[in-house]
Image (cartoon, rainbow, N blue to C red):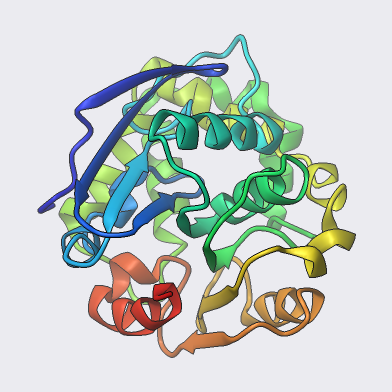
Length: 273
């Protein structure tokens, strides 16, 4: 976990967030997805910090940031928080590397909120409809039931769900770090609350603007993604007027954890000015 730490605390419109930064060079912001946290970047931060000032944070309701059931934390709220975090970091038009629903958040902030980037790298992102699996839809319809399951059953659900993102598994220590924030009482409510707040209308609102991104874009995609098929990434590239797209053979939904070296080999040229 070299370089990954969350020493900063910052109050946002959706609660406090935990954040960190390291390195020297052009500003690079990492945007994690769901149900992850900034820990999902821990295998690439040290290498990135050799060339960039790297910024990361746990979104509200994720990781070490505040978990509150009484306020929204969907894509629209998170896009607002992303803009607030750029202000907190005092960044104007940074480079952004976004993963999973971090892609929808950063695109919404850009296309609907006027937030500018120097470059945008999108990796296995939530964007093109439909978003989720049959299980995702089932949980969304029965959030109250799942929120009340006993802790040991909840842990089994979280571990199975998280484990389903990988093409070939990950280290046990990484798995424990990924699931741990969701296992206490607040985490359990937040975990299923994210299913409830998933609204495809929040990406449909700017889907027709995807060809209007105001910065260079590069798409990375784990070719064996069990959650968001490679074909969805190709559809995104088509909607964005075919920016460069790099397919990552043998990797699933979490390339940065599954094979950090291969992911960096693809990402570093895409991030470079």
